[in-house]
Image (tube, rainbow over all chains, first blue to last red; front, side, top):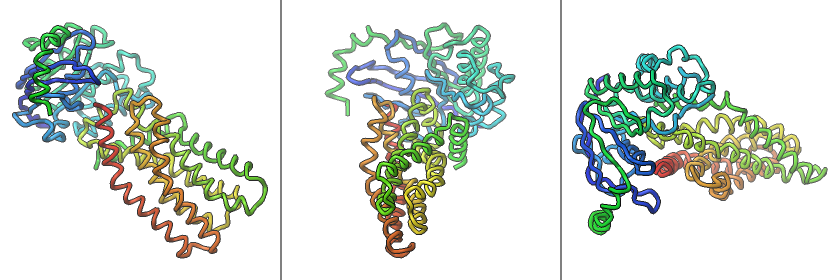
Length: 227
Length: 225
């Protein structure tokens, strides 16, 4: 499947959850083959930033652009570009491993061959007829990751704490797959507490200190820019 | 369109392998109607008169039972995020969920309804009008219920909220469904008098088929915010 590589940029992103302003003034700039590692304490807004960039949340302020076009202007196209791994594994206990991944690759148009290759890449090929209810937490995480790996058509992979529950071998498999994705021109955004092998990755640190420093700026922002 | 069918098939598969939620809804429907029948006493005329209302009210409540779980588990395990990132879009996701809900809850209720009608001693035309009404009305319950289910995703006491949101909206469906049965029972057949309320139900169905996916889709997107 043809991969449309472009570039992702975001300027002045602010995110509000409830009454709390989680972060403001975040800029992101990613080209083909680039990776962004998002770090920060619990509650610093790593997951929210990833959900913003995936198009699941709308920013409180600022804009997100793909090749200069706002992603909100063509949400359908953005959905086609993104493969997202969230906190939850989104796995139904009643389905088998093969049924699970095949559903998502069929609906996303990645195809059955991609599903099988992704299962093999995460070392799950022997479990494909296994019901998901009997998988361990680490195996479920592998399956959720395999669903992203199957999205060879998606140029932007967004992974939220992918290493949760993974053993050393699975982590190596993940590193290899992510490197291959970037070699092919794919982009990567990862939030993680763990050290990941992402050569040349940019690091974005979200944190309470950054937030306090920008409090004054935010007040100005609310008057001037927020709609 | 292909993705839509994939989602419907997956939902049906999950429902079949699940712990029998459809069976639970049908059992609730039958037992509830049974309580009405016993509560009203042995007078055949009274039973026949309240029968249509009792059956319709129980169908509404039974449909509510499984609606609560339409999006809740998907929201909690992250499936809803993934579904909204598919090319389908939130509206078609909601429509596919609604179709699967109707196939797994509406159809079983429809099949069980003649049995329940028997409890109340409805005559032949009355049973026919009941089935025709439920055929048109149960998809409306599902579609309107899907809006409520989408709106109450992630809410505390979601099930209670769902009932408060949806049941008042379904009163017209109940009224016309019952009117069709009463006209058929009294007029002796599916004549014009029974036909009119059924036409109104058909109108409700078209209206909700057009509007519910849009409303439920918007609510789902909002739920993830």
